[in-house]
Image 1 (spheres, rainbow, N blue to C red):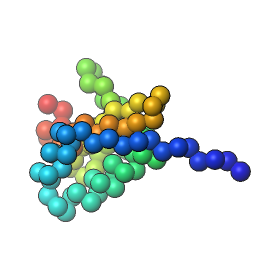
Image 2: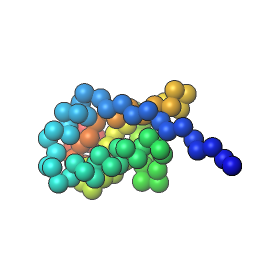
Image 3: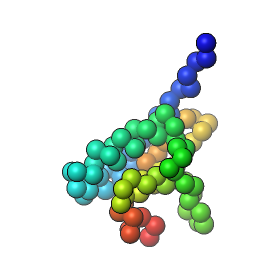
Length: 90
């Protein structure tokens, strides 16, 4: 019998919390589900590693992007921002 991997701890940054307050209520449930899913699998097939000077990952959820970092040593995921796709990479 194999033991399931320990889930990652999720931390939501203050900027991400503020971003979520500005998102229409209809979209929040899908974004919440995507964020909670990162605890079990911080690198799902829908996530992409950021390139260039930015470090971390992005997860697409409709027209929004969840920008986050992963610390594999301490098994933590820090959600830094949740932005509309047109504003996510400024």
